[in-house]
Each structure stands twice: as structure tokens, then as C-alpha cells.
Image (tube, rainbow over all chains, first blue to last red; front, side, top):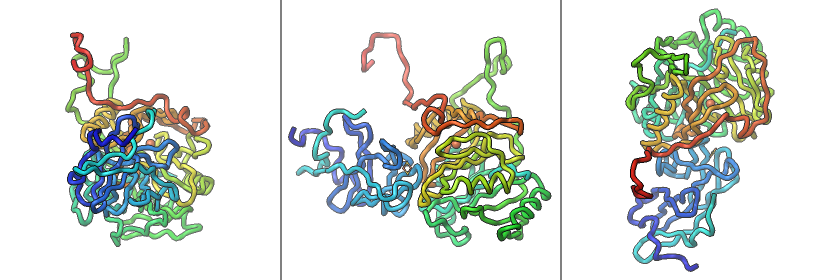
Length: 123
Length: 314
Ligand code: FES
Ligand SMILES: [Fe+2]
């Protein structure tokens, strides 16, 4: 299946402030996709902290994924910090583990989409 | 050793306004908040949390792991109990007597501790009353629930720590401070109850690698399961995120509902915990989903069946 630019975008680049993170439900995925704006590009990560097997969602409130200084993604269960560009945990219980990347693309209207639609259905 | 349990937990956090928002929604009261200095967040009996910016010079030094918990203030029953703690711990470590009369020291793993004569104010509030067949607990016309009934944290219940050395932790809290082990989850660690508190646990330790040493969660007691369900539902409706629960633990029988928080640990609502005395024989069970709860549920937005055959949209 070719990447569905016909699918509605998760959001548009303009909807996100510089450095902002937001979580989106994607049909077929059991956990949200976190989109973080970095300049004119975006990073995508599964909302699954790797501390516990299977992963658990990380925000303390809807869309509250960043640490106080807005320098890292954080899991607010036990304070793990993740590099926004590499997904690597730099502090906390999952030190050395990393988040699962979701490759994103931006269409010519600024809409942000997962590069590949999810395969099958997660349970 | 006549210790009651944590009166205050002191945190150094990286987002003070976020913690203020979260703890206010959770139901603690704060009279002295500023975004620069943080504040003190109290339950109804005067136990609570102190939130400061992580670089606040008044805080004890942070552990290398980056945990936000900087100090536990443990309440004891009276001045004689405080003297007893001082005498015992002074045998092998420095114990400072501060100007306010409190003691300051560290446990064997470097967690900072203070002891003081407790300042908690006993509450004169009824607990939840349940009507069972032939055994009503509420008088006629007394309602079990109203949508806007208060559901506020009544007292600080317990703190759970990730510790690299369980034997060291037991050696300190049981053998030096006289805590009782009430039950043990093998593979994780023991539940501990101080002598002057009948609650199943004020402390629980979970074995982890050293880089994880720090706080796992803290909990306040509510007045009963209905208050817990209401308090948690109000959090969910405002967009706060559940980590685990609602459910009911097996060891301790306490209802639980954990929320992730900007304190960088889970913050739990707790209700109806078992109490014990020294006749209790500790149990043991392997750590895991089966031993951790009698049942576990997941919140959903309000919904109701109707009369008509409305189908999915109806
Ligand atoms: S679950 Fe994310 S840090 Fe523990
Ligand atoms: Fe708990």
C-alpha cells in the first residue's frame, strides 16, 4: 500500500508551535503517536515508555510529554528522559533503551502523516 | 521505636507550575505557592508534600540518579520517641539536631531523612459507610454518593522506593527503626509498617539496579472506595493520565488508582487499607499481576443504555 496522503493528516505543521509535542490516536495502533516539531521538520515516536515490557503511555496530562525545560521527552511514571531526535533514554529507569520511532512525512499542504500505514492491528 | 510514618515528602522538580497544577487537581491544598519557590501541599490532616525547584539551595543534595525525592520527614509520637531515634541512629552515623528540634540523617542507601514529633492533626470525619443486606451502615435517607461530594486526600499514606539493596533497606528500617514487615512480594521486596501505625504499609521497597534508585510512587488515603473512584474520575475528565487502576491490591487490601505526574513519579489515590498488629503473620507471594491486585479496571467516559433501538449513533 502506498503511503496514504489521502488519509487525513494527524495535524498540520502550522498547528504545532516550535518544540511542541502532541499525541495522536492512529487507527490500528493501541498507543498514540507522539509528534514533536523541530524547526520545519517533525519527529514521531510511539507513546510507549520502554521501562516495562510492552510499554506504557508517558504523558502526565493529555499532550504533556516534555520535561520542564522542554529539552527531552519524558515518561512521567518514573521520570525517564528521552532524546527527542534519537529516542534514547538518557536518565531514569530505561537508561540505554529507546523509544520506537514512527517515520513521518509532511505533504505539500503541510499535513503530517505516518510514512507507512500501520500493518495489521495491535492488541 | 514509636514512628508513625511520613509527615512530609520533599521534592526538587524541574517544572514547578506543572506540579502545582497537578497537585491542586489531585486535591491537596497549597497556601504559599509561587512559581519561583514552589509550595507546600497539604492533605486534610496536615501531612503532605513540599515542592521546590530542583536547584533550590535549601534542598538536600540530589541522588546521582536524578530522582526528585529529596527528603522524607517521618513523624514520631512524642519527644521521647525522637530521643530514641537519635540515640539509636547516632551509634553509627551523624544525626543532626536542627533548630526546630527535628533530626536529620540518612538511611543506609543515601536517602535523606528527617524525624520530628508529628504535626498531623487527627481528623474527626466519618469513613465511607456501606449498606449490606441486613447490615445497613447508613441511616435511612443518607445518600451513598452525590456527584459533587468531596473526595480529598485525608492523610499521606505511603511511599514506595526503588532501592538497589533490599537487605540493606530491611536492615535499616526493620532492625534499626523497628518497622514490622507485613508482607513480601518476592522478586520486589517487603511492605513495612512502623510500630506506631497500624496501616499495612507506609513503605514498600522494590529491588532495582543502582541507576534507578529513587521514588516509585506515593499515595494519600481517601475516605473510601467511592471517594477514590470519584477523585480518579475527576482527574480523567480533566485529561490527567492514569498509570494503573482503578483496582484493589491484595497485600493491604487497599483500593488503588495511580496517576503519572510532573513530580516524575506516580501519585496514587488509596482507600480502605488493612491494619495490623504484631499478631499478624507475614505472607509472601511472587511479584506479578496475580499477586498485585484482586481486580483491575479501566476508566471510560460516562455512558448509558437507552430505551430505543438507536444503534451505534443512538
Ligand atoms: S514506566 Fe516510564 S519511567 Fe517507568
Ligand atoms: Fe501504593
